[in-house]
Image (cartoon, rainbow, N blue to C red; front, side, top):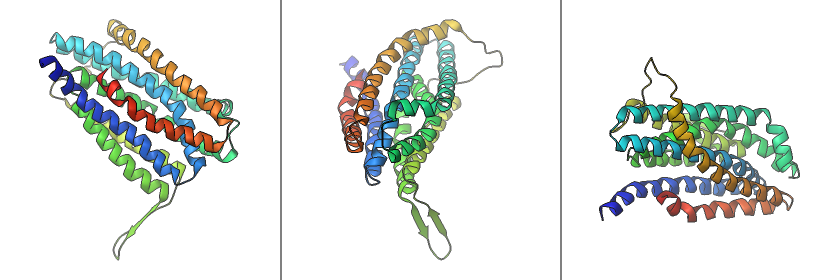
Length: 297
């Protein structure tokens, strides 16, 4: 019974967190749906690519979680803190390199994957990709930092951050996609309707706030761990080997699955805009089914 309670105490907040993450995608789909099937198709096509890197960062976070949990279980807080620093810093470096590579090769990449799409869809793909790819380091920091906190038994803080991100995403995306006009005799605020660009900006701002909040929690010190780099900090290759030794195999598994979905998406592109949109909407709904199993794992 004690083991069951411990598992549920850890997993229930993660189920809630991942539910909000999935809901964020579904809500974006609903809001984009009112812009037309071209907008939904473009967002779905870019998300198929983005999900590969999100899966990679999430799997990398697993390596950090396991290593930190091992040291924390031994009550070696210094090693747990060092492992957290190495996991977060390495994720930032890797994500920045990936972001630069995708940005440099974004035009040929989009052309190879989605060159057969309608011109309006193709243009929206580039708009959405140009903004969302800049959030890769933010996704990496949020994923790995959440993994650090879970490694020391704190799964509630990542859940709270996820809820805040989702609320912000809904409010910002709605305002930026459709535009907003507020005012009275003393105050006036007008936000132009930005369409697909607004959807990208909304999720980008939400991810920025999420990364800032979870880093603030780690740097300020949670109840169990505090992210602090001393002046004599040196790279510990044994710790990195432990983190990557677990994270890389997990990432290969996750990335291959997402690559398979991307290949399917490439095939669907040739069937026309309506089919692209339908495929993305269906995948958004199917994501809900995987929440409990993923959270328990």
